[in-house]
Amino acid sequence: MTSLVIAEHDHGTLKPATLNTVTAAMACGGDVHVLIAGQNAAGAAQAAAKIAGVAKVIHADGASLAEQLAENIAAQVLAIAKNYSHLLFPATAHGKNVAPRVAALLDVAQISDATKIVSADTFERPIYAGNAIAQVQSSDPIKVITVRTTGFDAAAASGGSAAVETVPAVADSGLSSFVGAEIVKLDRPELTAAKIIVSGGRAMGSSDKFNEVLTPLADKLGAALGASRAAVDAGYAPNDWQVGQTGKIVAPQLYIACGISGAIQHLAGMKDSKVIVAINKDPEAPIFQIADYGLVGDLFQVIPAFTAALG
Amino acid sequence: MKVLVPVKRVVDFNVKVRVKSDGTGVDIANVKMSMNPFDEIAVEEAVRLKEKGVVTEIIAVSCGVTQCQETLRTAMAIGADRAILVESTEELQPLAVAKLLKALIDKEQPGLVILGKQAIDDDCNQTGQMLAALSQLPQATFASKVVIDGGFASVTREIDGGLETIKLKLPAVVTTDLRLNEPRYVTLPNIMKAKKKPLETLKPADLGVDVAPRIKTLKVSEPPKRGAGVKVPDVATLVAKLKNEAKVI
Image (cartoon, rainbow over all chains, first blue to last red):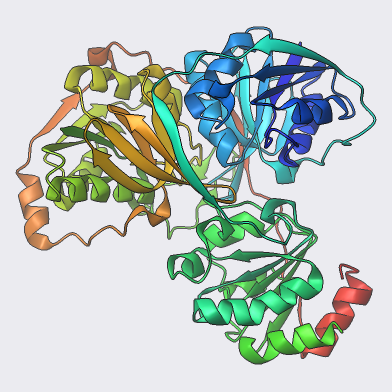
């Protein structure tokens, strides 16, 4: 029984979600291998070889894998899938894009967003926006799993010395091609990896106010910025800041919800945070029902005062 | 060009479901059911493509119980031209649904399939990708913009860190994200018109698909409850609590 983790990387380095996925793979039992499918991705392959607990790194390198297109990455996984009992992807935008293609072509079901590995064939996963937890058992010979990274600790990024085996890259499918990307470069931690998150809701009122009020607080705390769906839909914050059932699932040490009422879809994305602070002028807002510390007041006075009080 | 739009009947997004006391599932008796919100965005996008003259016919499809007819009528009230119900009382898991939809692609030969990225009941986020793989079609998931030009679709996708645009050779499968569009309200005249539109009913066996579930739900439980904490009177107290009690700053 051997598990394969499909690493998320930018060719040069590994994305942190890979480390949580390795921990989930170790819980499946047996050896853990990591697949690096990329172009000029020796850096990522070397990083994967150093992860504690990884027995082998499989490195496929070629132009077809440069843009991480779902069709080609899935084909690369399928080329070696039969050697494994478990295929694990981080439940990120990339992992969610590729994993079901692999599962379908293996004619197996997929377990999405696993939060716990109960045994080699039994898993826990949240359903209905996290309002229920299902324990599910797969009867398929190969388990294809996406791993909710907040459910598992990160494996140690150093201490391992796995062998790196090179395999040929698959040919391009010819079905899709990459046109371009607009990636926002931020000088702050990534939302899903941040220890502290400052998150704003519709009550922020405008994009300018959102930045003017929340950015200094986030800077002071070294925090990532997040948003509710209402704030994103209103154009106050970029799409990929959305925390919630169908956006990012986060579990930082400290989550500060500013002007967020607390719709169940938002709570689904952040209720596993260690400490939750809610600042809202409505004392009846549902967010207060799950907040460790609630402060009822006007955001535009409380948050600048909070920032100032941090010294 | 024909467009196929799969839609799922789910518990309405405003309903907070309860876990059954015997742990066999969630109680969905007598709760409001609606079209999965992401699928509604998919229907809207198909209708907009038709209004632009890119699309000639929109076929809505649903797989599930008889009551899915209501969901299909809603799709037709938004603007789908006809509907197909693949009727089954079996628990239909994403792989089974993808196989049913693949059989319908083979039959109807659409130029585009557009569906929600995820259903808000099982939160699987699988069907579109599985369908694309089984049908050997390109895919663009989490779409926030779709442009059809010639034999290609340019799709802007919401990814971690920002946006990405990819070009797909048609036919293709696109799954919708929240920012793609805002679905229109259905009007009473359109609801009346939708009642007269054709709705065909098939069985999985008619399509030659085995829909037996591969994943067994052993039990469903409540998530750990998170109790309300305390209200603090002012910023100074909040900062003191975060520093000394919670020790997170």
